[in-house]
Length: 224
Image (cartoon, rainbow, N blue to C red):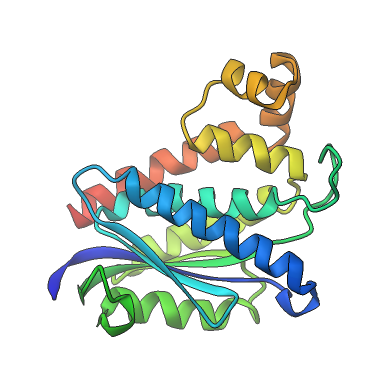
């Protein structure tokens, strides 16, 4: 077991009971692949995820200032899921996710998250339990009340932005969060750079980028 200040990301698929078994399996496979990709991209910190209950997941991030970027990457991946076989375009996402970030001290085993425990796990899990009744899709809870108050507002605005995403917008945001440039995304999706730029603006990327910068600044300052 290792004890440290960290971020715990806990999430579940929204209305997953309405999906076909094939859809659930396809989404879970996308999540599994993404978790492995995130784990392999780690620098000096540990990032690891596990799936449970069929439609839920939990992960630990040793550098808590990276937690929102990772959470948004997961959300964009889920929102961009397309099972129609046709180009996503402006289609409303068929799948969505609820994600709670808890930051605090915890004792954990990166190879056995289910036996890990501590403040970060408790904050993340308890907040996720209340998010449905509060109609929230992204939330942050820390031991600092001032940070919680500030980001309660930020996350509500973030929900307002992401609720307007189309599958195509979410797809572009996903690639941007993977540090791809507009031209690289355009080549990958066989679209013009102008079309990618339009989708980026429609997704509220400039506002999201500012929020990510603010999150990193605040969390590094408080939990360095």
